[in-house]
View 1: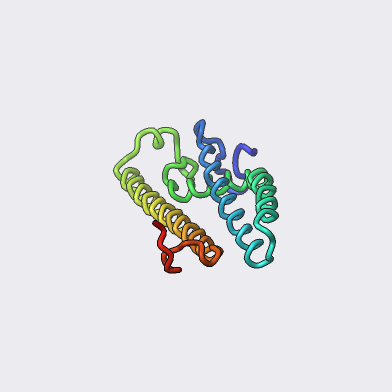
View 2 (view 1 turned 90 degrees about the horizontal axis):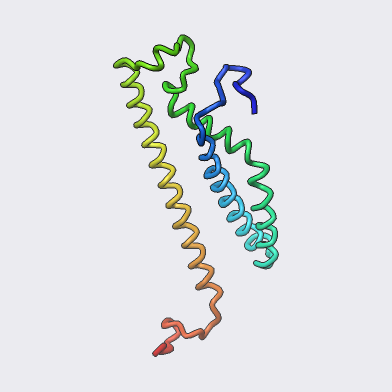
Length: 160
């Protein structure tokens, strides 16, 4: 990995553990891609669930390796966007001004915190909607593939 961006000079070196967050980005992309691929292979292509699962397993092994650098870049871009006043690479920033923030710096940091909070809220909402959607699909397929007369109350069969 390069030390800094060749175009704007943004340093890529961060505190230890910063890029650990890219694991979550990579995991999220892998889950969404393999879940969507499984649904596509089973529903649109008519592949058996076992064959689709084998394909998705191969994708789940290869995709995180291929997407690793992109996940790190995405995390760095997200951090730079949300914490634009904290990066210390802006033109005119000195070591002294970075150590002693003034009132204007504190106001910009509060704005950054508000942006980060809103972004986190959107991310949590999207994660919840994805989970609810996956649960709805699972319930739909579980009820649609149940054999007739399996003892459901809708068939008029007493389960006791």
